[in-house]
Length: 293
Length: 312
Image 1: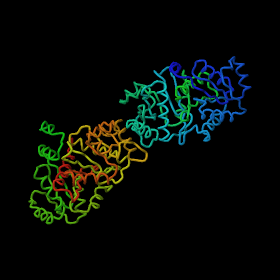
Image 2 (image 1 turned 45 degrees about the vertical axis):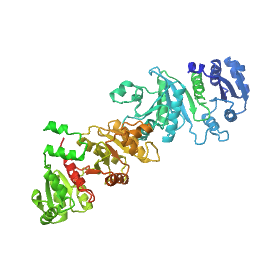
Image 3 (image 1 turned 120 degrees about the vertical axis):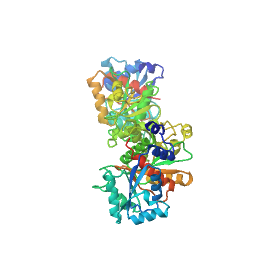
Image 4 (image 1 turned 90 degrees about the horizontal axis):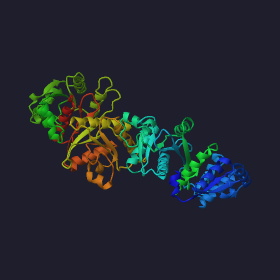
């Protein structure tokens, strides 16, 4: 990702309630790597203290002072809406306050009827390339329309990462079409829409069980004749539970690195957990910078 | 003999079906319920004369004989089972089929409702439990290079997904009998696009994937496709649609009975078509013909029932 970003202009990053060491550290590293210019919206005093204790040169940031986290969210969103930011980032405030800022109709960061969804990029040593997965955090039970939007975000993210024609596996429990199982039927519909050119830019195959999506040998055993099988770039999960369990299993039970953004707003929004490492936050900034137009 | 038979398939014209049956020389036993029917007796006589059928005419003997003579047919070519009562005759014809004393059941001069009720009877009928009954027609058209199997022209008004899958399987079975090994099935809509606003297009997305995954009888199924994309390679090229059917469909599966019925009747009336049609889903072939079919099509329907009762 950092290599890809070398050929790209620096993006303006606006971090909301950027008072904590992880957020400031990640933004600082991103600035040092030449990916972004950093605007920290937060409590000036606390930011100053954090920079001092972390040994970070405060002069590399532009600082916008606000008194509360809600104000920080609103101010950051307003700046992005006004074109003063290319990427939005969540600092030390709760997700709902952050999302409420993005969803605030006054600033129009979310287009009418727009769909916000979470895109995660996972690097797992056991897979031969990056995996872009969704939605593990925002839409609990996506309907078909939302799944189409999620699929488009996954394809966009994969293309931003340099995949020419991303292969999307629509995940269910089996490769068989089970009409009564929404994950299965909707995966089938998405695959057909892709075949008909109604979903552009990538190839969608489904339903596929996870093993068939990421393991060539399994796909061969089941005789799945598809270029997506065993070589997926993107995994579309049928609901938040399955996606969330997958991503948390990947991070906690194997040696995985990840980055994540929320897509669907005017600009990509970094939404890492407050507990995420500086490294994860840095990857997320990089992903957002890549996805930003 | 076997070699000759193999050489004659795939059957691409309805006349070839007749030639094939003649060359095979097997006589299928057709039990006709209330056979005193001037509407169908000619088609039966022709099947008997062509040597691929025996007709077991159940009904009032004198009326059967007079119906035959009216059409200049010698009643002596038929085996007549004299039963005067309409219901009893229907049940008896059904029993012959049920007991393997006949291979095909055919409706004569009895109301379709009454006849089908006998076919569908849970205890003595010919439809296995939970089976879907449907109707498939093989249509011959001067403007198409092979037979076109279409479904459902007559039985299921608004088939659901499960019924559509049954319709697909029946059509594939019929195409197989004509020697088309892996038929191309076009699932017909008004456009090739998938949309939630068109529930049939959603069913079609499922069915084509089910076929791909081996969840149906072996075939190449794709849909939604409009009739142009199904049967005209030029349209496929112009529209740039990526479809394995490629404008060379063997089977057209329609979303509703009205659509399919209008399609086939339009072709009969304006397209110079002939057809052979049969009820599907029953243990053995069941022939129900419309009065308005041409004499030729009626004969083809009888021939089709004999072809479908082949064991291979």
